[in-house]
Image (tube, rainbow, N blue to C red; front, side, top):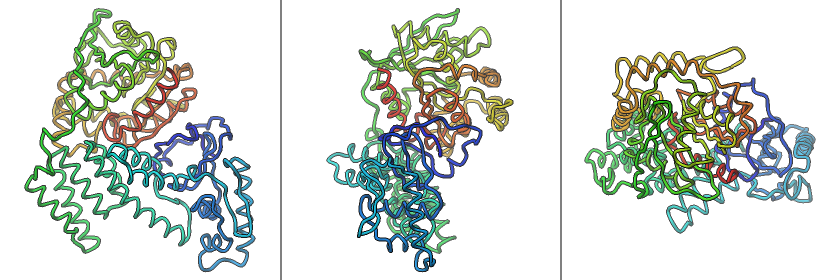
Length: 574
């Protein structure tokens, strides 16, 4: 059994089966409650969840029995149908006895936890009494129907987003036999259609970056899905011009020819021609591109602490009864630059819609002064409190990013009266290996590569390879990252701060964090690998751990789950 931290009705953003297997076996599961009813999951490994506990459904054939019962939730399934789905055309002589054994074990596992009923038998067969909305497949299908009949594009996208969040990897994973294989193939075929519909809607609403992130990952599972390649090409044209889209088409055409001996469909070939002509309807114009909400960019102000002037901004009004949100940034931070890039500005405007947003550049970075020496996370906690004092903020949720995570942990542990909650994104308590600390074996290689970039190629955007690798082929994205490098910190200061990172260790503070905490971890993060985030969540009492697809930069790619997690945390601490 595996412990997860999620209430029964909360949609989870979970990794696929391959990512899940990377979790360290050294972490002990926290005690969980079996109260609250079961949620059954078919869109990935077949199991069910009770409270915060993932219950292993048993052997492969036993999982097959459970999947067959849940295929039409609440409906009776004849015994012969179950036998056919488990064993196919050649069931063993003892198939009935084996089936009864699997049913008995499933009854024992569920032990009355299913909401509204149990596993029963009548003249029509076996029936698992369960609300269809407690079965991820049925819920997924219902949300897709809602999306397709939605009155507005925004409602359609919201329903599609919720449906896609339920998809955890290969459906019916680990379930053997021809029935499961046919069912899997049918689900995959329909899912490709859902992904394509979602992508069209997202592009129309200005979320091309999210489309690139999700469909790039989907290519490994659906390499010849032309509808997904089409939408990915359109999204790339919208955010990068035509070069990346044309490269994608060439690679797809070569792969189809090599492996299938086929040419892409006419629709894709026509799209290539439009890209080559830079069709304005395909590429879009600056006037047609979506823009962030029309907030006026807040003025930059300064507060002085220990002879260092710290730059900060306040976005949005105070929300009575609701804590502020303080963004604690990483190494590459510049208050003016946050608002020059539409996806980044859009993300921070969404944060500001949830609560008064306070942003600042840490000492040594961006618009703030360079410090007088090398300061520890504990010493920099005073900077966070000074910024809050200057804004009249008595209580705030700290939204910590990358290297801002350790100092935020120390701040929360030392000042629970000022810190209402923590959102920790892409950070670590310690980045280098140590005895009893199963993290950081490859960190020295990362440091060496980043130091080499600082010495020989600073300002050219090469850190994109570590912070946002999926956009590394984008000329525009690399230029933006290069500008952020130049404006955020000098090459020498960047090297100095990288060396300071080697000494950071706030593990002793983790048990003292007693505020609601969410740990957000991107699965493809090359700078802060998922084992850092998993360790944080294991050591901070009651922390909720959420794995998301994408790279290190939390405000790019799929950001709806990030906003949802913050909104839920704010609701609990208000």
